[in-house]
Figure 1 (cartoon, rainbow, N blue to C red):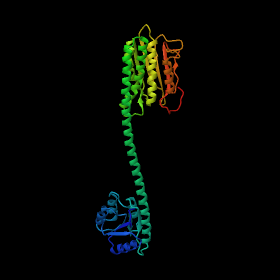
Figure 2: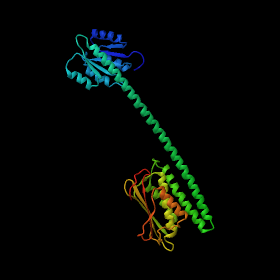
Figure 3: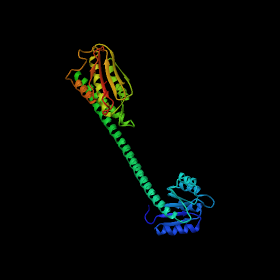
Figure 4: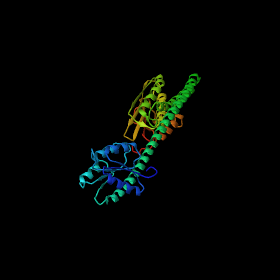
Amino acid sequence: MPGGAKHIFLIDDNVALTRLLQKDLERHRYKVSIAASGAAGLARIAEGGIDVVVLDHYLPEQDGLHVLAAIRQLPEAPPVIYLTASAEASVAAAALRAGAADYVLKDVSGDFRTLLLHALDSAFAAATTRRAKEAAEAEVRAARDRFKVLAEERALLMREVNHRVSNSLAIVASLLRLHASRAQRPEVSAALSDAEARIHAVARVHRHLYTSDDIRSVSLELYMKSLIDDLRRSIEEHGAELTLDADPVEIDPDRAVAAGVLVTELVINAKKHAYPASKGQIRVGLRAINAHRAELSVEDDGIGSANGASSAPDGLGTIIIQAMAVKLGGKIVFDPSHKGTRAMLTFARSGHSPSEAP
């Protein structure tokens, strides 16, 4: 309640009774104001500063229920104690249904004044609790709004960071491409081109993140599509056709980077080893197994190899493939029944997903 005496507002046309109640309440250190009609009472309540209203049922022009309904429509309406001489339970029930905090029955002897004091104490306690609850809810809303602003600022900052990282990686990739074009030795040029493809795989994720509304996840199928578009240009120069068949899969950015580098490395292997003297297809697949797991695959119909792997066991490509598979929480498996080479990796779609058998 506001500082100072609590302000009780009596709306009752019984002058003798209201004077008696005023003296009684003032002895209990309440500030008391009086209105003899509902219209006058509503006008005063609208001005504010009233802590509790004591409202009589029988009023000139309209009964207390109509006045109660009007009070409840006011902003920050004070609690109302309904005062009635009617012994009909329906009147009290109607008042409570209309929003009265309590009701008190008048009696001839005047004993109802004690009940009124108890009702006032209860109304003050309820109002204090309500105000505390409203203040707490307002603080929660304010904290939520502050958090939303901070989250939006953080998302904007992260998009800017991803934009700059993508641009920086694009510059590095361009420098590698320039060096590859000027290299005198074919193996050096090929190694630089492979490094460029790996960098593009990482840059693509950051490019996706700064153009996305959600920086917490990546649509892996869309990322794979843009990655395959990048790889296709260099693959087709070597006479191979690169295709993608992908299901919708959401994944966190770190794991998307690992998946992109892994696919890039497997495609580079297929480009180098699958079709040394002819043309053919290299197919990339992304399959959603269930809500928690997915499968990546890269396959060709080329000459294959005895152990299914095209890279040397201790070569850079093999090391990168194994490292990315570990980062995704899986292991590369080669399909021995496939004509050519088919590499598969089953992985969890989230780093926190439950482990399930493929």
